[in-house]
Length: 326
Image (tube, rainbow, N blue to C red; front, side, top):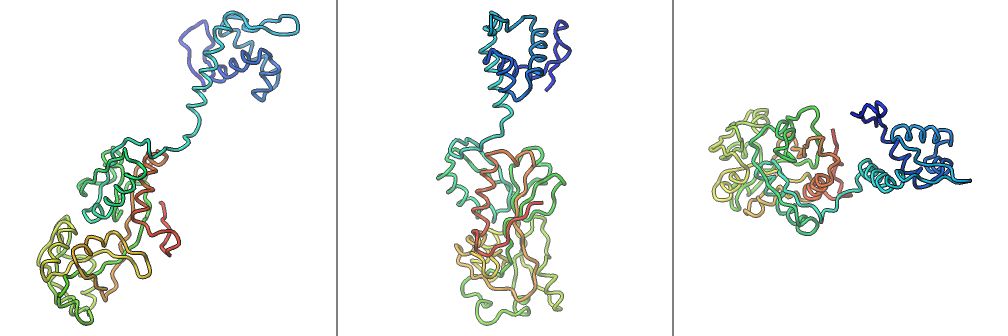
């Protein structure tokens, strides 16, 4: 670790190893013992002592019979040399991890309304128990995630991650399917749900950009069918609320067969919606989280990512697919 010196009387460059060697020599007061302490040869340590003498313009250790004794300058430097070495060791030692109980941070997460509603109770519950100094701020999907993550405006993006920069870290959390959500007593809740009956019903769509069509329309078109979308809303929660009070159908993400229930369905259940299996091949919905790589090793951010996993990912051994990072 070369350090350029501005003093022309000193060597052109100083090495941090000199501080380590000085500490060992002053502590051991012996070239041989200092060499053993630093796992080097006595000859190499003698050369280092000679260099230190030139740099500091002081003998540092002088012969006194069979022993070596420190000079007054060496005595004055002993404690400072030891302190410098301790600081170097602390600086270059890997972090031992972060105690969640000591965290004092506000994390900003960007997510759709349904994801935020599913995350907030679980994350806040974990924070109360493990990290009481942590606060959570959930933002709507208003920014392009790549620049927002890069510039530190958000800590995590959670949702369907499909528009990331090359350096962005992405971890898949859970794969879901879409179900048809209807109020109790809706005509579709009685009898067998067919593509034709689904197409004939009145629908509410969800799109931040106001799009009228999506994967369900493509699947219906393959059957020679089309649906009528009477409203397009920007969020799933509003669509579910509309479906809970009227005869419209909304799409609700729910767990795959055999998987534990997903918290992304909790809002639909709370509104009393019936979730019906759609008799069409729809693409699955993969929910993941994305972050900038500068946060990968940060202890607080690691706690946040672990908490998100616990809330959204099926428990180990439940048969769910393991998360993949790319």
